Image 1 (cartoon, rainbow, N blue to C red):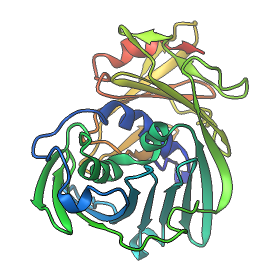
Image 2: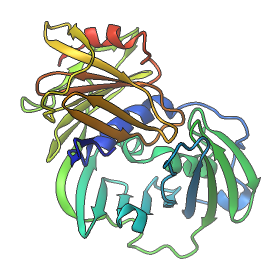
Image 3: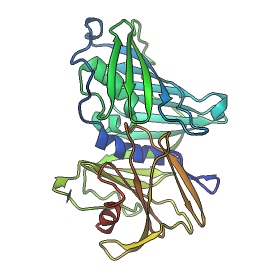
Image 4: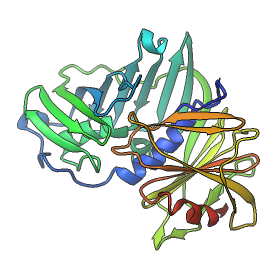
Length: 339
């Protein structure tokens, strides 16, 4: 996600922290219309390419779907690569994401500068962080895995190339998949740019270190154990932990004067304020305060719901997932406590 506060860009990594939380919650599950196994030509282990292009279902004024994603996926190893070029409309904005089977890098560039973030963790963690809806759709078709929850998939043609139509709560995706007959050694070489941040997978309950603000609900919440957690260090500093249907992301970015409209006290006695925001037609969110505005967009979700923003003096905590509603947000926020 890209956050903007009073016209000033403050995040380059924050988007992936929240994307992890939402994807972790929504990724599992079945969807009607998807075959149980790929066609014969796609059953052999190897490298496959895909193009995923989207169209918003209910665009509002000025809303547009993002540029097409170009994907390489290796069914033998789980490696993947995602490339996107925004073009003139997005001022040359590009992303290059590569998982080489050991670690992953994401390089984001605009106006001649590219920033690199490294991701370290298990293949499942990397997929949660960087796979999003697009990679999961391709992976599901090629491996027979369940598609992302909340996504309806229709196989238009078995191919080759295969052609799919996937419908989420926000957009309709056209997916074309074919086998790569001559894969090169550089297809999954890590993308490189100016290093700015590192995202590390942590065991839930492990402290990310004294320099990172970390908040959670304890080892279990609503009868379920925490499923994953991570810490971001470098230019961006944050901590994320996910429970079934709920994710918590604590960000150390200072937002002077930003407050919600509901005062509350956290479980440890800390005073905070709360705001609940709802997505627009393109999945983006915005929150206006007397001291400025925050705008951001989620990725990797089939049907994004409301987010709860908890403002502390030096931290903003984001609550996301299907457990977050207008009625439940205050109850959940009050149970937050430092790790």
